[in-house]
Image (cartoon, rainbow, N blue to C red; front, side, top):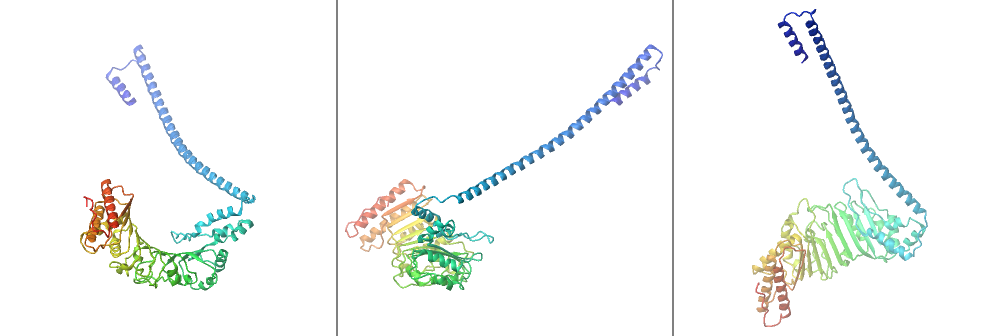
Length: 499
């Protein structure tokens, strides 16, 4: 801008006549040029000063921003430090309180109250230890009465004089932990005849220490429950350990990471446990390399309740050998890397002679439904069946198809049905119950009544079944009850119109 003003001034000077500096007009023009130049110089100076101040302000703003970021980081650090101080304060206060409480005298409570408190504390010792999630962790288990006995002389006197506190004996032999035989003898000895619960966890071979543990038991010792979890490598040692333990009433077996292939180790149980147990639970334990079960005990086998996963069920022979068996609970098998080849066409030994009158079926995946239905179709004594979740629709559908085909009717003695967590509308369920009533009535008319009609129906958590279908099912069940009462009569019961 200033250069333009100068050029215009020069141009005007060149176009005008030479100025006479001595004249009054000439002196006036010279003074104006000087004033103009001074104004231009002051303007340039002012602009330079403004630019310098703007640069300084920008620099100050940058520094201020950096200070704000630094202050924010310091505040966050201070907040974390305060939280750490609070945690240390709480931890220190708790430690001081615990130490102070340890110096106080024990409350004066009756021994019976202390025994009740201790019984509540040691209750978790009856559970199997939790398997570690990775190889860096150890099996989590404890001996609560042993810890209680180390608190004070009074507590030691109470715990050692209460045999029921020592009935839960944890036998743990893993790569990280090994039970000392002297401690095992001491724990068993403190029970002094009370029924024991032996909780066994084996992941390593213990054949070299079984003889040391055997001397802990005497003829006076009784065993209420044996719960075992065993890995594939330690399976052969389980038989040796169970040989030294007195016969039990309840037996629980669980396999740890055992594959279903034919190369798995054999788990064999002593006959005394199989014959004496009234409740047996089996999960993921391959009892022999090939079906059937490792042992067919001679009758009578006093088994009352059997809880077992589907794959293991095909490996056990309970047909005709367990006349006292009343309930079978079938659970979903574990996830195997490879399903054994025999499982696809497995039937199960002597299924027709199974004496169980109650069957409970847990939800099954699609891959196990066909073997499950194949096993259920051969049961003859079941009077009550409970089906849960995803197993309801496939089982009811196949049973409806079976009874409509006019062939041998599955579960001829079934009179009570319980379904839970059923998500369908119940059409096939209603058709099956109606057809079963009609078939039972036809058998009564021909004097060859071969099946029982349903007389009782219960449903739990089945929101999609309409009230109309439920009402029709109840009518058919009432008609079935009347038919059952009048089995020997000449007249027949007229079924509901919906049949």
